[in-house]
Image (cartoon, rainbow, N blue to C red):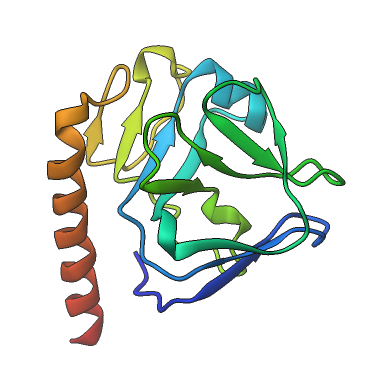
Length: 159
């Protein structure tokens, strides 16, 4: 995983919505749920959980798409690119689609979720797998382990 400095910029496919990430992820994830499969047209979605204070939209006005429920999925109103998600009850982070960043970093998932719904051929290099979502009490230890992982990767790249 590359050692990446912030801030970083990202955008939708057409460029009408742009955003900035000014903090490293708390964790990276792949979600295998059927909803993510349908929204991406692929086997899973990729996310980088960015601390809320380290994320901001800098151009354009994203629109809510998908289910319009308590978990809000934000898209470009023009090209319909899925940009980020604000998960219900988890206001301390924003799930950014890391492939929307100018440089495709933070794409390697540290955890994978909803593996009970994954396609039989789909695999990821994730260090932790969960049949559903991790229990709330697991998030802090997982984020601490991810921070250690990033630190070790950064140290290794300096050597």
